[in-house]
Length: 168
Image (cartoon, rainbow, N blue to C red; front, top):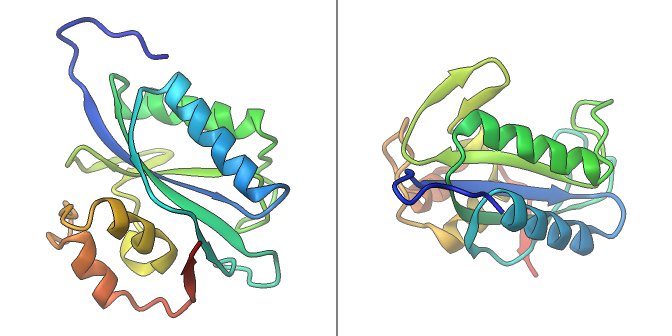
C-alpha cells in the first residue's frame, strides 16, 4: 500500500492490463490485486475484453482490462512499480509484440503529457487500438484525451482498428 502524507497530491491514472499466456483471467486478477496493494486505490475497472493479438496475430488471443487508480506516486516511480509487478509475474521482454503473462501500460496520468526516456503519456497508440478504447469507453467514455482533445467515446467511433473486441 502506498503511504502518503495527509496533504499529498493524489494522481488519477488509467492503466491497461493484458495477458495472452498462462491463466489469462488469473493473471489479470493477480495484477489488479498487486496494483491495488502497491500503487494506490483501485477506483474502477472494466469488464474483461478478448481480442486477437495485435502486432503478431499468430499467437493466442489477449484478455484486456482497463483500470482507474488514485495514487500518490508520480509517473516514473509508478512505472517502476508496474514493471516490478510484471517481472514478478513472469514477464520477459524478449520479443516485441510477443506472448506475455502480463502487460501493464500507463494510458493516462491525470491530464498531463509526459515525454521522457521509457515513458510517453498519454500512451501514443490509444487512438489506434480498439482493444484499449473499448474497455476505456466502459469506465471513462467522457475522458478527454489531452493531445487530441476528443473523448474516449469519440476516439472509439473514429478508431481505424478493425480487430474484433469481445466483452466477456
